[in-house]
Length: 140
Image 1 (tube, rainbow, N blue to C red):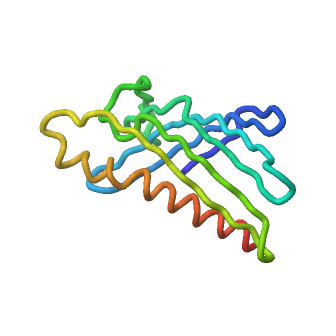
Image 2: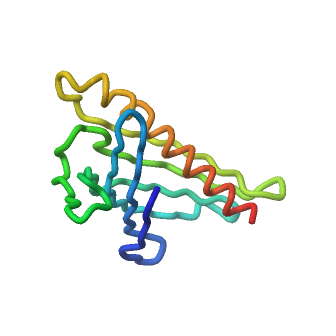
Image 3: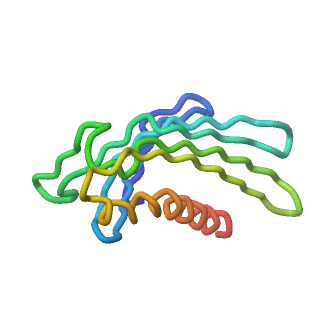
């Protein structure tokens, strides 16, 4: 993640922006927006659901002629990402569990050897980075 912003908040509901960077065989930058809702389950447990509302690939990211492609176009690296979080206070700490579901589009003919490694690893590595960041924030 190379950028994040809170776009709006209404109680426990958030609309957020994340810019994701993936470097593998090629470099991919995605502008994403998410609706996130936190809900208490009981005194020691909460849950959260995050759903993407927009995913757009960015051409020439960081350059003066940077442009965002229309959502639903591009190379198909990530089309949809939903995450389901569970938080529980127990054993003197916080237990965190996350499930992520990601969808990609078909890879254009002839580009599979370039695009496939990114598509396969982006969701997993994004989740791993999120969990590492969360651990670092909680242990400070």
